[in-house]
Image 1 (cartoon, rainbow, N blue to C red):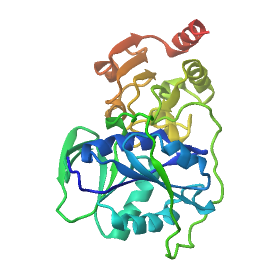
Image 2: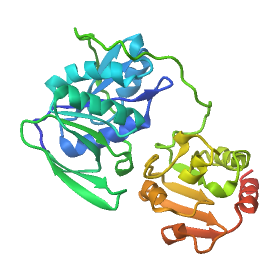
Image 3: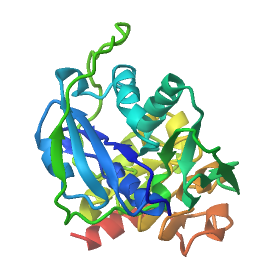
Image 4: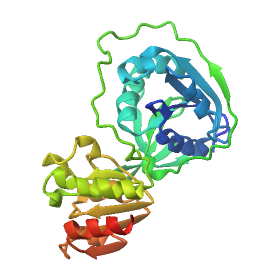
Length: 316
């Protein structure tokens, strides 16, 4: 553990709240240094900074307020963060859609390579990350005097405690030119009170066996009873039953819930790569030979159209 390095963590926020992915990224900081990190919050609502002060492993919350940061556009934020990062040895961000868009831009601006999906800190400049859909682990060593820009694999870390009392430092907008080719237009998404897929402790997913988007209502009703997030296999997404942002797997979202329940999912290797870090995996499939039963902790051979309504009714 290095006690001299300065660490900057970029916070992700959605709908006026710090995303839980930020908390998991701060958990990685404890493997880097015992001195904690500065947490950079860029937004248009001071409540975000107030939420951030409680996170463990945070020394100071650096808050920069500007209406341009309300929707966290990577093209706008990256030049600002790159300027701030000049004073830091590490720049970390969650490996979410936001982080994967933002961090390569920062790395390019700083003229360094980017490390993706840190899952373990071996030494201050040595890291492990998954490759080949998680079937192999790569060890990366960064040369001395090279700034480290990286995303943190959320499935490898738990959220930190929120009993800290960090200080808030309001920082000024740096004297730099921002790109004019990107601007926010609108967000098109379905309103949902369900937990974020990558942060939820319980996730239930459906496969192509549902047969239609209308039949996915069975899954949504069950999710609301369980307080769960809803995911889907790539086959269900490709069939048009659900939007792309619900896809779980190698080419979708990597998740690590305490409980994962798969309905009508056969268990293609690409899907299994996205759930291998789940605490308990339950599979429900009418095909007793489905590959997903090989990795499931609990396997139930049943017709999902009979099982889900009965299960949901018992939760009422």
